[in-house]
Length: 397
Image: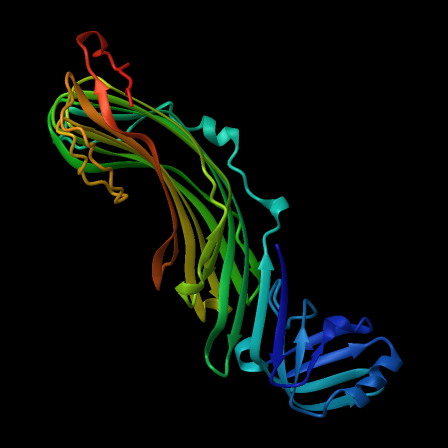
């Protein structure tokens, strides 16, 4: 991670780490003692340093600060020992919120450090996932065969905090996200079932948190879910394939104002297929979901928020005996009825690819920022005959 910090200090400040001739620093509850190994630099302190009311920044010298953090000390008065080239500053330990009036932080996780879910992770996935474990639905079998999921994430952000206003005045993250997913979903129903959603969360990946010690901690993570929405009016077996790849998703998420949250890219490439074994009213909608979430903590919890983006491609398949495609689905996709009211020796079938991106700030809002509904097959008749009741029937429209 790379980061830059710009702070407006309440007091004049001295960064001891920028003075090469500082050879020793000792700190106590009441003072900071600085020893020089160069006479000219020691003499310069009497000209350049204020006599009081300024801040000393320490960094890994003596016992003045913890690992990877700077110490801040507000100086009340200064005495000097010309023989040992030592400045003793009577001081009290302070913090960033007490010593600064404003702070701006910009950070980025460069593209070269994107975390990619590897083939090894793919190989750890079960070859066949059973999604339904409800003992009351023993006649319903739902499985996902050879699932594959992958993703990558790159994050940058900006935070401007004002202690005069005691709140952030600007706070956003930019997320670049990629998704690759494929699965074959098989549903075998022995009875009628209302709409239910069956999901499996095969893995999550916590990307190494990046930190500006004592100031900002950002913890990105990726989480994957796959599932299927099922409704059936009788005994049927349905097989549906879905694969989707998104390589250019971008979201700008504003923590403070949802109106400023926008997206670009999100051009999905997808393939699909569906087979059915009986003339029943049914719905089988396989989906995958990738959630990229960022937890942000500022100054040890003074500001503690999480935000993220969800990308969810879904293949919606509806079979109807009466050409009325009004079965509800979780994506609220409307599939229009056919203008033809009869379908001899067949069932009406319609299919659509639905892709939704939502952005959220957990504590404040969740909004839909991108939606793509693409008809795959227009509403039409799936011709039926006894010799094709084997799961290989194909739509004629």
